[in-house]
Each structure stands twice: as structure tokens, then as C-alpha cells.
Length: 214
Ligand SMILES: [Zn+2]
Image (cartoon, rainbow, N blue to C red; front, side, top):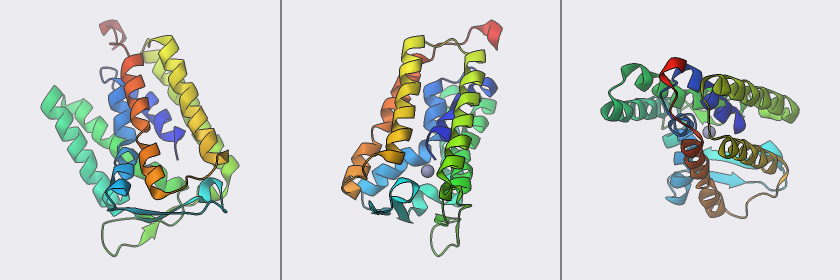
């Protein structure tokens, strides 16, 4: 899943108007921000199958640090904890922790049986909606649209930056589906770093919500 996560991040603005969209994006996509780093450090592994294409290009052979349920909970606590230390807001900290965990739950819906419950010899889970690319895109597209509507009801972003950001997210979604498979695991790791651009653009697009809108 890709834009679905960002859709949830946009929609979360309604629940946490004082949290920047950049922080919300970092939370919902935190596991996928860590994953390319773990690939480059060679502590997690992926097999690339260019011949299968689309949702089956990647076989997630090992990613317990970023994508096990237990570690998703741990990362949620870490993320919410750091936010609390900086901002001292319990409610927003809990919401951000849950946003981190939401990534695993949403991945559970689409992934094939590759998500561990805990590091080690864990059973692997996944409901496999990816087997139906049309359904996957309908779900993710709907999440993005609902997220944009909820976000725009709460925030008044820098419009050009905001829509460039949305266009870039859609472009990545389309190229993930139809574009050529990456040439190596290293290429996946480096390409994944581009996601920080979405976080940066989200910080830029977002403006402080006026007190009246809270
Ligand atoms: Zn993921």
C-alpha cells in the first residue's frame, strides 16, 4: 500500500489539527521510511521479481524490524514518546503512536502472507487484497480522496505546494504499478529515501491551523 497510508495521514489532521501534516506523514509511513534504510544496512531483505510485475514485484523475504506487529507497536511507542518529549501533548502523542501502528494494519489488508507478528520464527499474515489490483486502487484511491476532503476541511495549506505533493504521490502510485522494476535491492533502498521529500513537502504545505478551527 502506498497512497492509502498518506490518505490516512491527511485525514488524521481532523483528529489532530495542531500536528503538522509533515509529522502525520512521517507517522503513518514510519515503517516504510525505516524499511529502505534497513535494506541498505542489509538487516532486512527483499527479493525482486521483475517478471511478475505490479503488486508482485517485491517478495518481502525478511522485514521483522520494520514490519512485524510487535515492532510496529514498539515504533509507535517510540514515535509517540519522542513527540511527547518535544511537545508535551498526551493526546497528540497517542494519536501519532496509533498512526504509526496503522501502517501495519493497512499493510495487513493488502500484503500477501509476508507480515510477521514478531521478530524470529513468527507465523506470517496478510489478507492479500493485492491479488486484485483494481480493488487495491479503489480502496487506496478512496482513502486518499476522503483524506484530502477531511484535511482541507481542517487546514488551509499553501495550495500550490499541497497539490504538487498530491500529484507526486499519485505519480509514484502509478509508477509502482506500471513502471519498470528496480534493478537491485540497493536501488530500492535509495529510491525509498525519496519518501522524505513527501514529508518535507508536507511540512512546507501545512500552515498553522487558526485557533478558531480547532
Ligand atoms: Zn509498509
